[in-house]
Length: 354
Image 1 (cartoon, rainbow, N blue to C red):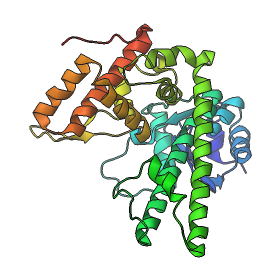
Image 2 (cartoon, rainbow, N blue to C red):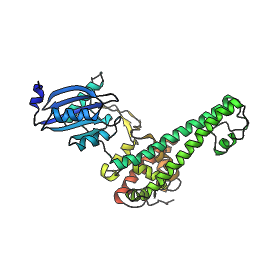
Image 3 (cartoon, helix red, strand yellow):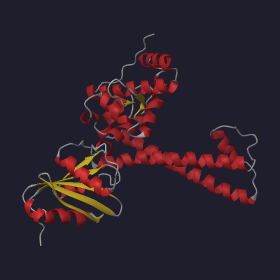
């Protein structure tokens, strides 16, 4: 027998909160302020589609889930079959202060409720081409981490076996890693070192291939204008510019102003104040860490070329006495300027005033 709740929901607006995981999806369905259903289904799109379409015919269905685990493929598939789907940033979902219990079932109920109350923020869903192109940049980031780890293993290998005579005590450069091939090792150590060196060569080749692909992408028609504008900034080359373009997508359409972009990157200070009490802390660090790292690296180069940015750096440095805080302030200012360049479609004008 069909549930009374589903009969009540016929031809009405249906709000579905979905909490996804690898093996199962928790669903909560609401209609006109009433919870219609709550269930768990296997993590399979066809199960979800059949449940929604067959269970709620002639209904206007909207599904909401948090960005993260499932990416955006579920959004695309739901939209394809005529079901409206919203992806929301996890950190923006409202929650009762007194709530001390968290599980997937409760999360699904909370999502359905905020959806019905229109109390949510939408996440930018890049088109499939941008997502696939962006994966090259993110894969490069992962490859770079593997390269750093492999280099550290080689260096620690030499420290552990007392073979570091003549090598630098700190981080090694290109010359040191070339010298590794010339060191005479016993057969067991040579076997082990060959594995590490082979891995390093492979990762280095992969890194070069990915970089070349990104540089070719920078000259494509859909990215060229953005890359040209961003690469006009002192200290930023086309390689960094294309990576930012892929991460951010259509900046002007996504953000209202440069402050929003800086907040998205994570260059805004934390604050937890109430009444007369103020607590201000470090930057939020929301968003991608490697994007922040790229902009900070460019900022170090920019302060040597742009007077206004250099003044910003030394003004903050005089106040706080910390170089890290000062360069982050420069990075935030540079991020705001990036938005201005892209909105006005103007090349960066270098401030050379002395």
